[in-house]
Amino acid sequence: MIRLAQEDARALAVSVLARHGMPSSHARDVAAHLVDAMVTGHAFAGLPRVLAIVGELAKRGPGGTIRVTKETPVSATIDGAGVNGYVVSLVAVRKTIEIASASGIAVVGGYNTWFSGRLAYHVERIADAGLVAVHAANTAARVAPFGGAERILGTNPVAFAFPCEGEPIVLDIGTSAVTWGETLLRQAAGRPLDAGAAIDAQGRETVDPAEALAGAFLTWGGARGSAISIAAQLLAILGGSEPVVKEEGLSGFFFLAFKPELLMPAEEFAARAATLREAVRRSRRAVGRDTVRMPGDRSQRARRERAAGELEVEPAVYQRLLALLQES
Image (cartoon, rainbow, N blue to C red; front, side):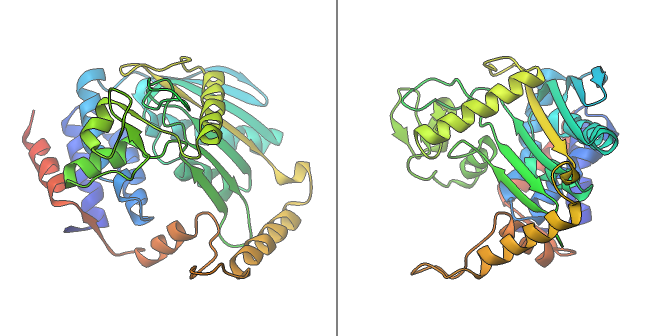
């Protein structure tokens, strides 16, 4: 593995993205997101994503000017103008916090964008502002619905965040059994997928990343996971997305945020949330289990351990990034 200081990983991402047409301010936002993913232990959502983003920039270009097309005291709709979703989502997060802080609740949708990034990155910022957050996004159709063999759904993550004493409680749940980014990383590293994660172009289950990329991913949890994915896609449609996003299409997202004070004093909710978190962690362990985890525990632990440490990058990914720096 190649080891990089966090500032070097961030600078490398900015340089590669800017080299391939992304505005520098956007590249800095994306790089911060990617490095945070690696710091929290999600290597596939870190520097390897630069490769996919560069590929999309070559096809789509950097996009136009992000703008709010509709706004009320409790809502807003954002036209992403073809800009990368990591950037558009940050605009939406700021607007969500602004509206909810003033009105107590905010519903914000966005459309004409691509790639959502880690949803936890976005909702954590909303929870840091003292708000409960719900977030859903869709992607290009890469997932077959339960029982199907055709790409209809996106990988369609959903996320929640809750203010709490200490760190917020954050849940980020991908509805597909594997993500596009993880599949690309496993392909680059020559590693197979887990069984039951994907099908090939003929509808047969496969663990070959290349066959999965040509076929379709599956949802986790069978029909239940498929149902949650459909719900996420419906929320993204509310944000302005196409009902089914084709490979070159543009996707959407949805944010809901509100003050806990709408239902109970914020301090009381934060204390109760902390009580639940500790009750879960201290509950009796099942046979063969070392710990009982809350959602986000591994990410938070990884962030503490890597607070100022180096990050590991697959050699094949690192060499490809260096090659991209030399391309025009």
